[in-house]
Image (tube, rainbow, N blue to C red; front, top):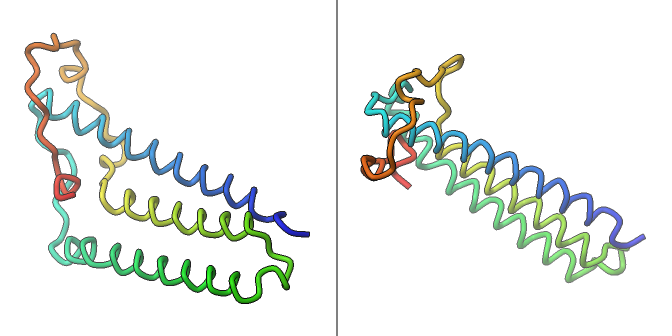
Length: 144
């Protein structure tokens, strides 16, 4: 009965990271397009209290995930084999925790564009690569 839950957990972890990466890539592409077009950032500024929460909470959550991972590892070392838990099960659980940490970090670091926002047609016109300057980072995603 060992190693039954590990592979599905690893698969779920990979899906979580993939969705987080796709969201991050989409937001960064929109930021680059806005900067290349010289348009202002369409996202409303965050309230200062939300900025503080966004800076403080993710490291606290990461610390909690690391602590939980250490507890899982200790529990496996003490009684894992006796309970029918294999090493692949432990790796799957730790991978899921790590994937959640990546998702949480990228979710709080990159703010999406407003609902229903569409890139203006002027910004979507092709531009010669030699005329583009390096795009500055916009919004709170520039802090990291």
